[in-house]
Image 1 (cartoon, chains in turn brown, yellow):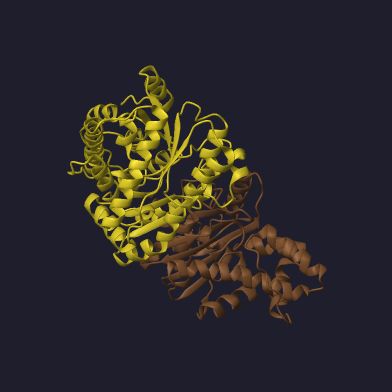
Image 2 (cartoon, rainbow over the protein chains, first blue to last red):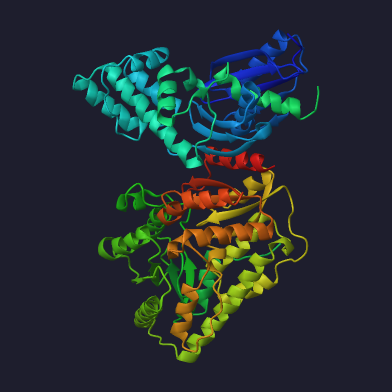
Length: 261
Length: 357
């Protein structure tokens, strides 16, 4: 493992991620944990931990991204998650194309051009529907663990249609379906379909491109992956650490800026 | 630094001159007709910083913020100084507002409407001229003043002169030595200043080398509210070099030549810049936007739309398609008509600027 040269912090709405890269831009250490309400303190602690782990003392510079990026103390730069995800995924998968990042608070569709630059993008801007929060919220209502959502949806016999376009109204719909005796797994399948249909609409707004890549927490969900492939007719390409791509990209931007510590 | 009076100050000055005030909703209307009848137009584009409780009670949640805010503003007494409320048929939401005001709210002031054709055939010109005559009659009944043809033509020529000054400001943005916020505050003074005051103000704008910092953007949409938007854009490392805003450059009406004042006003309104609320074909509009971007060196188009603005939203997918085919970048964001801009929206704009850097 090389010595840490740059640290990237992705202060997201659901999780806070931190990544250290060496001089070659390889990811050498990382942290991911649920987002704390006091972003400043959490980010500072994660940076200290990475600096200690990478044996680089207190001098490794930091680039921050994510919705809490402007609250990360000591960051030399803060950059939007769109730029960072594009850079991180381009480096991890070594190809331009279309990236879908389904995060906790928003979903991004980013067209990645040569060199890892974002050349077009779209973000959901109406509500939590179409984001990881939609599944998280629904899972809680159905008392299903997040990691079980995908497998149970894939194993469903039958599917319940979720027609509401709003997370809150979808919850009401779930309550009605449960009261009617609908099977939980069939509801889960319907919820995934609803989420993916919104994501696919965003993809088509930008214009579907190949290869199609996926990052963000929802990338770990097997049902979401399968349904996105089915709906787009594209094979999905996933980085090894889909949740860390924003933080990784932030660290890479720092490294590419040429300013060494 | 220019000194621009506030709307409230202008209302007071108008009153002191013994003239009347017309509260006018967006977008296109005959300013000269109002002035000739003794009304100073005071345009109402929201405003953004009002409680929308009253407006929400009268309209569906998916009605645009301009209508909900303006209705709230009216019910809170914000338009008490107005002697008439003029509502052009810009879109279904504003037509609905006119109906709600007339049929349910029944404000103290009379409500005047004007229907604008969506094309510019000879039948449309005839229709619009008839509409202008109808509005003139209504204004005369309210004010007790019927301007002569000469008075009306004088008012038209004064407004044409103000439009020429507005056009010069837009055309020569790079030579106006004002920051983005001050520059657009100056353009938007046309919303409430009398033409003669606007002409004087526009001519006094400092000339020299305009701001040239960071990524050059062109902005499109209805109205850039809150005006903090420009400060944010500057902080992100960009500046605005041109606009396609309904409140600014989409109202650069060409001076007319007809000797009949009603024909001349109708020609101006129908011959204005391309605008989705006037039914302009999207391909022509996209070409005009692309041409303007090339002319002023804009690297990207920021389409900044009031949420639920249907005429704007209908155009967005094809505008994006045509601009993309022309190799131009475009970002579309929607905003709520409130006193602040959502962080998500700012992040999108910031990412757009990063993308263009």
